[in-house]
Length: 154
Image 1 (spheres, rainbow, N blue to C red):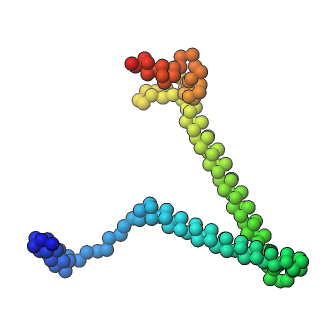
Image 2: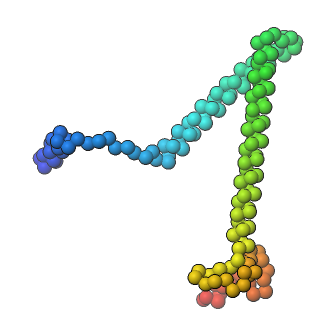
Image 3: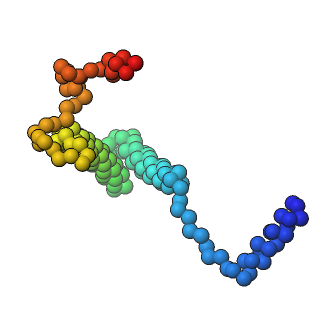
């Protein structure tokens, strides 16, 4: 380290004595948040695998005994059945959320496509005029393809 660097370092350290520094709070990076959630989901997956494995062992013991059950194995079957039902409910809720999201998105996009054509700063002359979808524009007699418009520009 150069002499100037050492002097600066010494002055900076002495400055902290006279001007105390408050702790800085940082916003966690998105990578840290996503990594933490990923780790948490892995822990949940490991826990469910352990419970499922334990239920399988109990079920296997019951089958090896010729179907005789004792109180512990009945509890194992109940836990297994509960986990199965929980998994089915979770899958059903995920499917419901996906279908709901897709229908909301389609409705939003359709509303965007069917809104009255407006130009900024100009009042609509005819509120019945609608924007055409891309496929309708291609089929329209006045519609042209991208290649044709490029030829016209060239």
